[in-house]
Image (tube, each protein chain N blue to C red):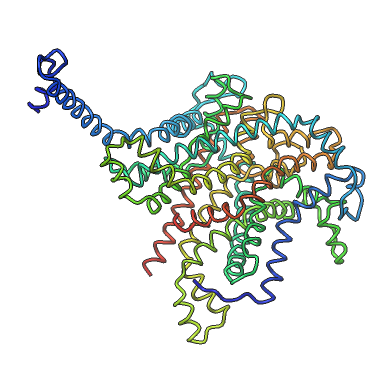
Length: 334
Length: 274
């Protein structure tokens, strides 16, 4: 420390000091070196924070602040027409939700559509990944081909499926009648419309999940299969007793991600309505929570109620996550 | 890794899956090349007609598709570039630099992935309304400019791909953090940056929930928002709607055609390490 101050004090160094050129240069070098080493230490200590700062700054502004403010707004009456003026109403937005049949209807629909889309999607993805895991000619082509729906937007995909599921001229009903079945009213039947909306989700996400399973399958050690084969296990038995258990963490992960995705379902039910607004069908038969939030906030202009729905969705997600954790914990301890 | 040769049945089933994946896209193009009256007949058309040019033109002018496409390119491009840049910075710090609080901060980054976007949509809207940003592109760019997934993805990649000796060698040569970043980290991270950029571009291009809240068809919409406007005519012309859907999808399909393998690799890589 003393050395440092000595070197850094103006009297100790500097061009004015009457000394040989060599001495002066060495002094300047010394100061530069200290400055450099100090800057170096600062750099080491603070640049990591500078590198992670952008993420946290943006998150604070556009993630954390809105998150907390939603809770605050949920306790107020706020209208979209004048978001600046808020009237305190306490828990009234929440108690209204409790008595709101459309909220429960939307919750029911979200659960049904979530199950209808997630369960088949992941089951198909698992089988598809199993096939892709064979030594294949053109494997790159198949992988890219099953992933292409992922490149399609919710909007474009839903508009196409609206046509395919059309009651009078849609291809699905045409195929059904060609096979001798009755035509189905895919937009107005409750179960039929929920199945149709789920189909869009399944179509878009199966290939994506298949690739995630495929990646996990390729990490399964080959010896496990060899010893299973020695024990006389058929290919299907190997799949059930080697592949599926090894993939359990990945399956759990995709279940969580798909569940989160299902609770947020919005674009498909909005556009499956054929431009009739955010009601989710003439009888709200496929209105999800996400869509109901949008209807309350941006059609009926009640931002406070929309915030209450948002928090209700979050609490439901937390409940699901907690249940999954309990379930998983029990399995692990077994 | 197991390498059982696929039987004939495998190819048949995979071909069916491929057909199911591609069919709605091909049929979008078929429907876009027909007329609205033809689409209101059975059986539905299975092959291309001669109306594609006219439908594309109507979609282009009615929904201002040109502007919408340009807006989407700007949004998706900026979001992808920003995400890649900021994620590489943060990913490098979390992967290779030692600093106080790095573990809880990383846990916080991952934790933010669990927050549903609906939870912040109301205040976010109030915020951009206050800033008079509704209908402006920054309203959809800034809130998505960084993402936890990107940070996590880059960190996982750099943990293995960037040898610590390389960083230390540069340090011994007296390189500052910025120089290390520029001359060591960015070159090492380039493959992952490319993949993350493409994945982010696809996600930003297809984003729907927030853009439809923040932008209207009359302002500066993205393609996804413009598409919803096409469906709302008095008598919606389905063939024009399909032409619009085709316009909104085609650019990404081209990206997939060129970079499909890398995108597949990126998703699989993220899956294993995630």
